[in-house]
Image 1: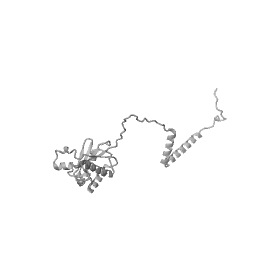
Image 2: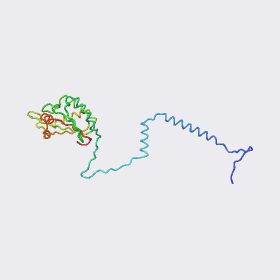
Image 3: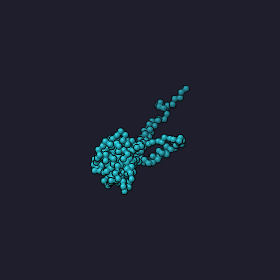
Length: 238
């Protein structure tokens, strides 16, 4: 049996009307829109917001303790992080401009090989005879050259060569000592210009002069007293 609402004398139902609910929903919608607009127009303090996010993240996702296994073998392979290296074809074009503008470095030779670039500097123009002391002009030009190299992370090495006729009364007693001292001086000049990574220095003396057997006497004399700045294609070891 169904129950029907009672009707008054005009035949109308006595059940209360709910039409006011629609007006209430419209009012709430307008108020919500108003507050959303206020929030969107307000300035959020990033530091406090980040602090709140960090707090919630820590609370809802507590950190878990992880156990890392330490290598225990007698010999282990170390992890190697290679630094980002600049393209050598681009670098050689930049360095060539610097070399061409320098009176001291003008005769330098720039060679691009498969995995490295070599900048060969004349030792006669860089150093005083029989010494590892840079001239003032060479120091200034090397500082400018180092200003370019400080923006790269390629591995750099400096190789020195020497072929002196007489060491009597000199600070150095052999071509090996002199060539190593000269390579260190050039490396220090580049470091002082801002190159942040390690620069490896090598001294070869006159040990590789056999490779110059086919060169003229003048060319042989220049190359046997040179400094090679070797720039690797990667940021790894030299």
